[in-house]
Structure formats: C-alpha cells, structure tokens
Length: 533
Image (cartoon, rainbow, N blue to C red; front, side):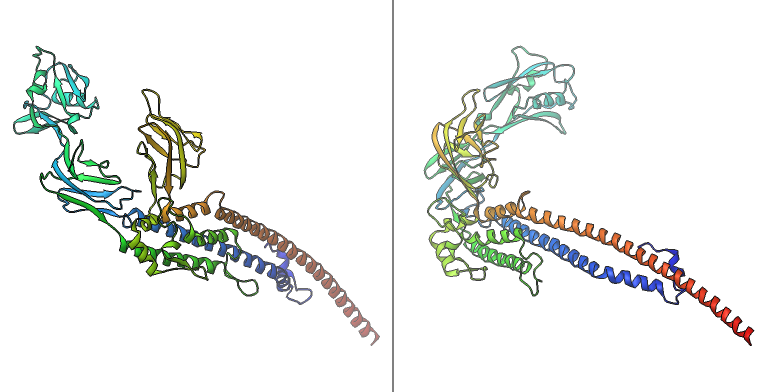
C-alpha cells in the first residue's frame, strides 16, 4: 500500500498519532475481507490437493492391479514334467483350462550353415562375376565387381538382399572364411550357384565347394500319438493359447503337459483388492465427509468425486467376463458389498468357486479376447480394444492383390493384405483381425477382466471431458476469481487509505490553523491585560 510523506507530519497540529490511527482504520476495514479471501484460498488449495490425492490413489490402485495381472501370477500356466526338453507358457489373454497332453521331441529345428575354404585375409579378392542365391524357390543374383571384390564385399552383397540368409566373415589362425546361415526349418534351405565354366574364383563359394556345417531341418514332435513338424523351435500353434520353446531333442522320452492353477495367488489377489478398495473408499469418504456448521471434507458435494464413488460402488456387480457359463461378477465369487459401502470377502464362497470353476474365477481377473471361428484370429494386443462383443460379417480372405474384406457391426472394415482393421469411428477401434478363410459371421468377444474394468473407470474419470476435468476446471476458475477479488481488495483498500490520509491531513491543517489563531488570541489578551494594569 502506498504511503505519503505527509503522514509523517500528521499529529503535529492535533497531538494525536494520526498515522497509526489511519493505518488502524484502513486495516480494520480491510481485515474481515482479507480473512474471507484467505479462507477461500485455503479451501480452494485444499480441494486441489485432495483431488490430486484421490486421483493419484485411483491411478495407483489401477496400476498396481494391472501390474499384478500382467505379471502372470493370476493366470493358469502350463506345467511341464521335464523342462530340460521344452518349456511352455500361456499366451496373454488365453484360457488353458483342462490342458492335458503328452509330447515327445524327436528332433529340433535347425538352420543350414555353410562355410568356405579359408583365404589369406578378409580383404582378399574373391573373384568377379555373379553368384545365384536360391532360398525357398526364389533366386537372387549376387554381383561381385571391382568395387566389392573381397570377402567383406561378398558378405555385404549377400546381406543386402535380405533373403533371411546371413553372411559373416570369420577370421582364425588359418585365415578368413565366409560363413552363411539361414533361418531354421527345412523350407529355408538355400543354395549358392555360379554359371558353368566360372573360373574367376567365385566357384569356391558355390554350395558344392563349401563345407556343410549344419543342414536345415524342421523340429519333429509327437503329440498324443500324432507326428507334427515345425520350422522353428518356438511356436504357439500346436496347443491353443500355449507358447512352446524346445530346448533339446530326446527321442522316446514322453513329457507330460498339464495345468498349474494360481488358486493361492487368486485368493490373495481378491483379499488385496478388497483391502485396497476399502482404503481408497475411505479416502474418498474423508474427502467428502459432512462437517459441523458447513465445514467438512474438502470435496464434499463435488460432482467428479461423487461420480467416482458411484462407478467404484458398481465394481462388485460389473460384468467382467461374458464368455462361457462361469461367474460374471465379483459378487458371484464371494465379494460382498457392506452397508457402509466397503467390500468384504466370503472366504467359503470364494474357495467353493475356485474348486468348482477355477477357469471362470480366473477369467474375472484376466482380460481375454476370443473369436468364434478359427478362420478369424485376433491380432491386436490385450487391452488395446474397448471391451464388448462385436459381430463380424461378410468376411472374405485376401486374394492376390485384393485385400481381405468384412464388416464390423454392419460397418466396413479396412482391409490390409490378409488383415481387417476396425474403422476409426467404431467402438472397436484398435481391433485387428487376421482372416484365413471365408466366413459368413464371426463373434469377437473382448472381456476386460477386473484390471481392465478398473482402468476403464480411471480413464473415464480422467478423460478430457470427464468428471475430474470438470472439477479441475471449476477449481482453476475459482482460484482465478479469488486472485481477481484480492486485486480488487488491494485497490479499494489503498484508495480508502489514501482517502483517510487526505481527510486527516485536512483536519490537521484546520487544527493547526485553529491553534495558530488561539495562540494569536492568547497573546493579544495578555497584551490587553498588561496594558490595563
């Protein structure tokens, strides 16, 4: 607040501490309004802080649950009787209940490997001309001229063709030699040839002139009496929903594959979820609690937090899995809602459900996606598509240069080669389907699981047009209004102070004038009195 130098002269005429009097009067006028503004500022800050705490709490809740689920501890996993021969794991989103198989690994897949005779150095010339590399029936000409006439140049020319055959130069005590390695599987065998009569030196690198370190071959397995082959030692198309990684061949050794169910982990997961839910709801209750004489929780009556409460209270009865005849909600497996809005676990009911329908209970926690036809597979990752049931019709696979075609809920999908992509305006945006056959109609089911449902609640609350955004906008507007009111108060208070200062300055001048007159009259009276004597 601006002050005037006149203020330091105040009181000379009247004898009063007018400067302090002006300051006290101005402060007395400003004080109640200042206190009201401070109360509004504190309340707004408390709302902002509490909203951030509540928002962070549901973030942490959703993230912790997602991490638990993605870690795989709540998924049934394949059990393998001899993990030295191969290992198996469940693919994300798969259900492997009832898995039982016997597998013998007769042979591992391997890649063809060729090595040339040694040359003096990797920079040694190899000869100019053309080599033909044939892989999977496709031929590729490898041209060597003066610009790349060396082992390094030959290796680079082969690698530049991107055929799946990798060339490298290996140097040892005997010199440098070319080593070629293809992809695993018999179909990926390759040959190198040169035109008949070639004498430039390139003939040394034709397959006939190189050493076969390893031949290309498929993996051979026998599953439940049926012999199958695979081009790789890692595959996921032998047992639905299961990734198998072969480690060694062991002809005659039978390996059993079953299921290891996470019963204890799910039980603990349910209890941890209920405890975290109750803690979160307790925080919300404190933030919205009614108080005495208008006081209470910082977010009492806030629409965003009330919407959060409403959505969270529905979670025990929300449909988390629509596939099969198993339980659809947490309430069906023993998660009860108490009168005060908290949750509790009926341990007896939970154990009964785990014993009678472990796959159904597991499905409530883990997001899953399924197709009703083997000719249409889901290629988009778990959690990439909004949960729901989608009907795909008029499905035609790709043919030549014509991409696959089909409709989702009656709207044309985008065909990209053998894949179908949901259009941007669809509820299923992000859905990618692989089409391998003509089908009139297919049902695609995307189940959120508990983790997906909680993520959905969080995302809807924090969306740009969601309840939390509305609350943040209101609090921001309120903070701006408080700042404007404070500026107005300061302006008015300064104006009032200056008015008081002017008023009392004028009063001082009048008092000084009166005193001067009084002093003059006193002198005159004394003079008159003395003269009469």
